[in-house]
Image: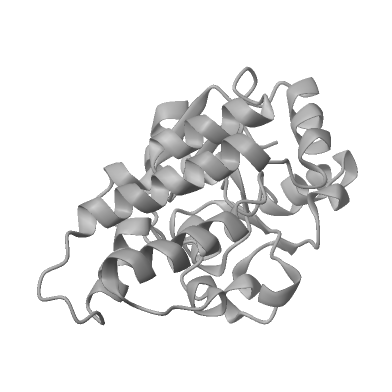
Length: 225
C-alpha cells in the first residue's frame, strides 16, 4: 500500500484556476500593458507564477518590468479571491476522509507560493489533516521538474516510489512521473486532450470517482512484483 499521498492544490483541491486567470488578466493589463485572455492564461496552468510572469513580461513593451512586484500583486489578488470565495472541489472531503481513516499521511506539493497554500488549506479547513505542504517557489525549477515532489517525499520520510500523487495538470503529471511516483490525474474537462495525461496510472473526471476499491487496485498494480 502507498505510504503517503501528495496532492496538487490549484484546480484539484480548490477551484482556484478561475481566480488565477482573472488576477493575471487584470495585473498584466495594469502593470505590463498587455491584453491577455483567460484562455491564454489557461495555457500556463500548473506552472510556477514567476515563470508565467517572466513569459509574459518578455512580450511586454516595457524595457525591464519589475517581475517580482507583478508576481506579488497576482498572488495577493488570488489570496483575496480564495479568502472570499474559495470552495473545495467535488470529492475532496470524500478522499481526505478515506485516506485519514486509513491513516495514510497526506501533503500538498504545489507550484503556488506558500502563503497561498496556507490560505487555501485554512479556508477549506484542511490544515488539521494536511499538516505538511511544500511550494515550488523554494525549488530551482517548478513543475514539470520533479523537485517539489521529491522534496515533499523527503520531508514525509517516505520513498518517492511509495507515494501516490493527485494532479489536475499535465505538467504536474509529468513532474510526478519524473519523481518516480504513481499518478492519478483529475483534469478539467477542457484539458483532457492534453497528451501529458496519458502517463498517469488513472485519469478521473472527478475526485468523487476515487474509492477504497480503486486505491487497492492502484496499489496492487503499482507494487506488483
